Length: 202
Image 1 (cartoon, rainbow, N blue to C red):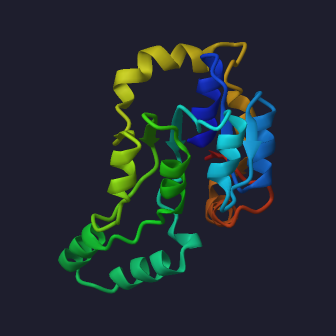
Image 2 (tube, rainbow, N blue to C red):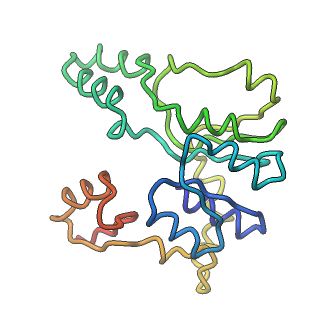
């Protein structure tokens, strides 16, 4: 998701700075003219320094729900699995165990009056948000499920263009048979062997 968000920005002539902790993903983005940074606790300062002290005009949070790197999130989701179905559903809706580090970094980094777009998935309803900072900075937020059909007619010709302006073929890092899918998913989850996008051939 983040790779495509960055590439479509470049396709439309924007300067794009991708923040990515995985070296292989940074290298992939750089092949398509995208500036990259590792994710650090000082990322807001680094982005402001690269944008004449302002911060980015817009920030896209494409992290999504990744509990496997969050001990609290993983524990809560595993605990929910032991509950009866009705209780489990309610617990997941209200648990508020989302990892908010990236979202808070986006709020800190974006310029005053800028826009934050959440294209990742946040599942909890009790997640604390720094509303005072968001109000003070006059931040606009966009979020929600992708309206796929709304964009298909515009995006499909770009993806199918033989010149491959978005580098679609460069996204694929592994091709496997369907019987290898469980091992490949584990490899992707643990970010091993440069695994970014896997094509499964039945």
